[in-house]
Length: 133
Ligand SMILES: [Zn+2]
Image 1: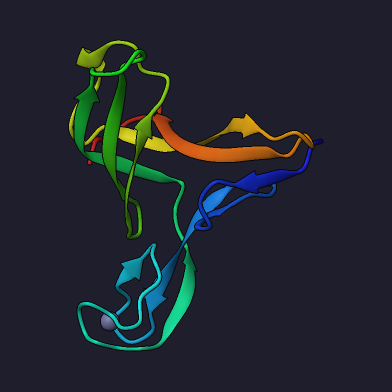
Image 2 (image 1 turned 120 degrees about the vertical axis):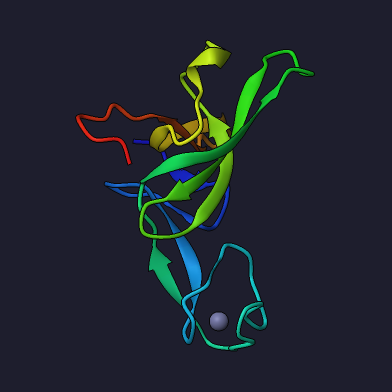
């Protein structure tokens, strides 16, 4: 298997790729970017939290002004965290609905001269059995 590196540092690869977030130690607010202080409680201590690979679409936008149109989504992750990413595996714009269940999907975005793969992430629709939230 070629060497792989994530395109963003909050994507953790391995057997089960997942996102991680910085979490405020006092109030639990989540941040993907580096913070000197929590925006909610001004706490200055941060830990790391593994985020769920499953969530639901909060909002979506169709991006048409490119050669290959795509769907940009904001996903509410189960158990906390909000992520903006592309929705993959959907060709029919009408198939995208608010509160649509999705799950994390990683893919190789590019390969450098040494064969190292850059791994990015997006979300794909999740088959759900039974109850809708
Ligand atoms: Zn805080």
